[in-house]
Image 1 (cartoon, protein in one colour):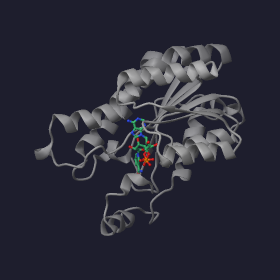
Image 2 (image 1 turned 45 degrees about the horizontal axis):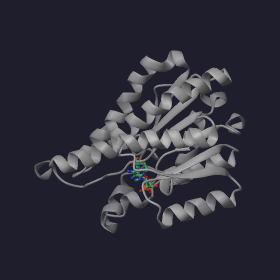
Image 3 (image 1 turned 135 degrees about the vertical axis):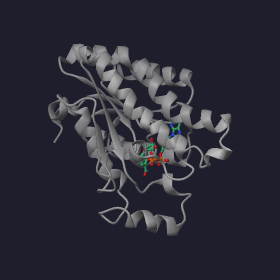
Length: 258
Ligand code: NAD
């Protein structure tokens, strides 16, 4: 469907499980060269590597904790050194960080959530820009940055997730400014905002709470990571979305219609 993704050099951060893994594997199925990333080399990373290998993908795993600026720089450098360029950056690494109400928030919680969800996106994108400019100039089309936002970035997080929801709202907004700064360099910036997707992200929720959430979704169920993946491919493909930039694409089963 997205023929022009073949041989594109695509880095997906936070991609050893969940939404990032589903997107990385789908890019690989389209013939893209894929960078898989996590902060840890754990069982999930081993399984992700095994899955990419079984697809016969041209890929590499890069272990970097993207809540640290120097590791964002190192990730981009290593990817470009290995594959000779970068055409598409997917900023997906992120997470809840901590569930705590406003009255119990402290500096450590603030740093944890904002470093994981905002520093990672800002710094990884900053270091990617020179390579994305080169990619766009070389191809005569557009390079793409796609970041994972959230329904929480639109309507606020649930109780205890104010920093998380706020951090995702920042991501939605950052992209709107980057469109103003970098569209002349032929780089497109878009966000995929998942609703409630069945991943490890929800492991801390009780069965009762999960049922309550399911009942709030018009489609009556959580989404799957595989149902999110095509939105990333669409936004990465110049052929499919070359005139789309600065947008937030919601993948949420109707849970919220902005
Ligand atoms: P997940 O926990 O299944 O996967 C997270 C991935 O990010 C893992 O590969 C993990 O190793 C990696 N990661 C975590 N911290 C990292 C770090 N510091 N540096 C590098 N990699 C790191 O989670 P998921 O549900 O697939 O979430 C993926 C993205 O989607 C996140 O940004 C999350 O906020 C967002 N999101 C998820 C949902 C949902 O319902 N699952 C909804 C909206 C947005």
